[in-house]
Length: 294
Image: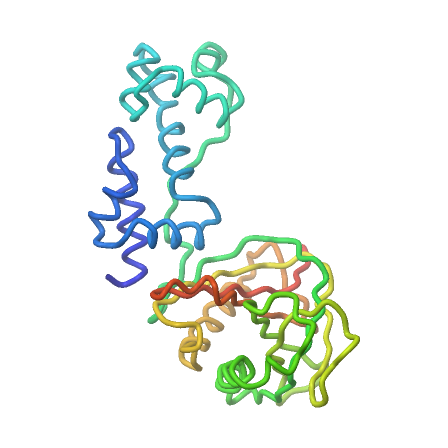
């Protein structure tokens, strides 16, 4: 099943079974995918566990019955898959900060978990680009190799340079912080109209030893916009076509005049890949850019 439709069908399956007792194993079986794959894909895309999201959706939907019916708490609990009233009351209190009975009496306004929709996701040929969240990153020291990337050949150079660095060059750097994580830095050069610099890199503990032919760079601690790409391929198979689709999609989003945040015009932006995220079927790549509030 194409990855986009797997996510779409998963979200539909969850909504169909909120007033039942669905298990992740049953949902996975309906989608012909293993439960471990399903949990990993969901957490990668939405930064919350699948089990937690299902529980939050059940509790959020149950509020409608609390407000609009006279059903007993135990009946509402059982309708949403809780065998005992106490387990429902405890989960409800953890989610909303008050018990179902307290909410029914007070009619307070509470924040709920709405259903996730994929209208913010970009359906790419080999995967999905999920629209962004705002994060704050710590300072990151990187060592890598610079490559000129001409605007008319981009993203062919970064895709090849990244693969070559990871396979043939990374081992020359001694003080790597995490040998499983790749950073692909792009440096925008002020007033340069023909190329930018692409720097396949790894993060390091210090710049005490920079191998000959390599360059050191610092990604400053700052507020960033982060996109997440999940693809149906190995991370080394990211090529110019996949990268081109992804960057075209990011460009369309970031050029939106209605956007609350803007990208710094002259700065470093970067992608991050943790090779441990590859599970034999899907890979994940994160893309970051420093931002300012308009």
